[in-house]
Length: 147
Image (tube, rainbow, N blue to C red; front, side, top):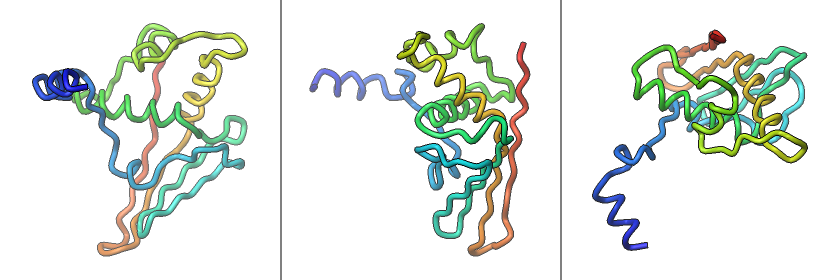
């Protein structure tokens, strides 16, 4: 344990690739943990509200995989300072870049991961703030290009 602590102190989190970024809104109000049902989800934290809207045939994202994908996308956007983020040549490549074992089959995560990735990328995210400086709001559509 002491050796690990010394390594972290010497190298730092950024040098070891262990730093992640998440948009402030997703820290204060996050995605649902369990399937919320329906096509709209609203979560509030004080004066801040997050609204997710998904196509009915696809559904809303939930659980750990969409949160992991968001953290990866935010980190890559900060590090590369680019609007385009390369996810790899395949879904398996992308999962490996997240440190996941990319296996299919009845117990493998590949099918569940793909389903949640599709749900996340098809969802429209908007937010609003009703506190001081009321009226602040935002909206994000993710444009996905498969190359």
